[in-house]
Image (cartoon, rainbow, N blue to C red; front, side):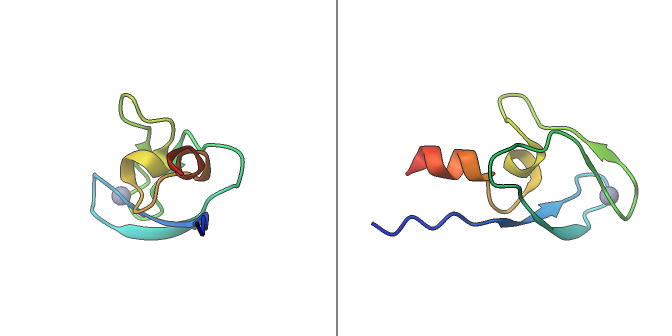
Length: 68
Ligand SMILES: [Zn+2]
């Protein structure tokens, strides 16, 4: 199996809909994310560990690793 961990995730702001590409840290989850457009402070939804899992196009690296 080729288990490539993706480190780039496009976060979609639920407030204004702007999409921003962000690089995810390998070993830590980002809990807060501030939208660069409307400055809304995003927090993960219930059950999600970080903003990338809730609003990103790709879940965070630990979740990707756990799925493999
Ligand atoms: Zn926004």
